[in-house]
Length: 220
Length: 220
Image (cartoon, rainbow over all chains, first blue to last red; front, side, top):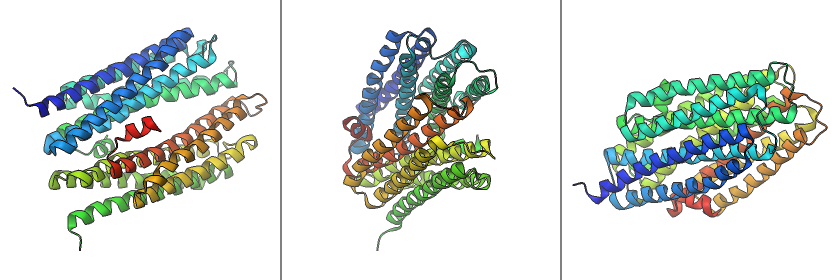
């Protein structure tokens, strides 16, 4: 049987995985709200970010309590440091899903996403959900190979983001200035969401290998 | 005389302060490059971000070494945890200064910032430099009162950001879609830069009080 201390560490990891599910679900619903101009769904995403924020405060507090009480070393200490990094990335991911939902709300009853960029936004939403689900599974398995693969998924998102900007700026945009600005910001939210998943993966690599996350980043 | 361990901790803090100076200077120069369409200055900012990135890797590695070797507790452990958080925020702030410089470069020989928003961009640049300088001084003094003031400086940035968006979207914008998209993204870079300074301040509050940074955020 494991001691309470290690049960606390495992519970922290479970809470992080739960958080990846919440923010992934939020980004999926936010994308749907954007495409369908569904203001109820947008409101649902905006309201549910409070749950994510509360979970972050709770996880951080539990991590700090363990740090203060147990004076962990080696892997246990790395677990806690990685947890503090990951929870920050996931809270921010939740904010980005909320920003997407706010865009859906602001343009209601129109869709903030006009036909010329609808397909690319849908695809960005799918990549966002896939990458955060993978980040969640990497937190669970601590599989360094999968963690490194997340960089490549992020390249897919960057390509989609460039495609979107070409649609707005390549000439032939008929949807007006306001809509162009909204779509550009929406694109940035998805792109940053994927960046945070990469950062989660790097924190897991650090946890397993002891490699500093930015040495990982610099060599990527 | 202090022991080498505590000298190492102090040297870490000095490096963080140096990093605030570098990213503040970069944002100042990036703003100037934007306003003057000065492509040499923009290139200088873009090249100098490598120094910021290298300093981040160096600081993180030193923090991890101390964590592994010294098994610090209480305040010393909080210093290291705060350092890891702050270095992430500052590296990201450097990226944002670089993004602003890239905008200056992309529109050369035109200025990416047309006359109707020039004053507000200049002001955002000044607020960005002021807020990061204050974050640097808070790292040095660990003064919780000043740290809490940084939230209010960030409100000033948010007001400027809203003013900028009104200029683009309020009707009467004559500068075209591409320029509107650029200005909207530039505005977001400044706004996020200030958010990272707030996050640095919260990490210092945690260091001093032991309050979880997000409990601080939630009560702010």
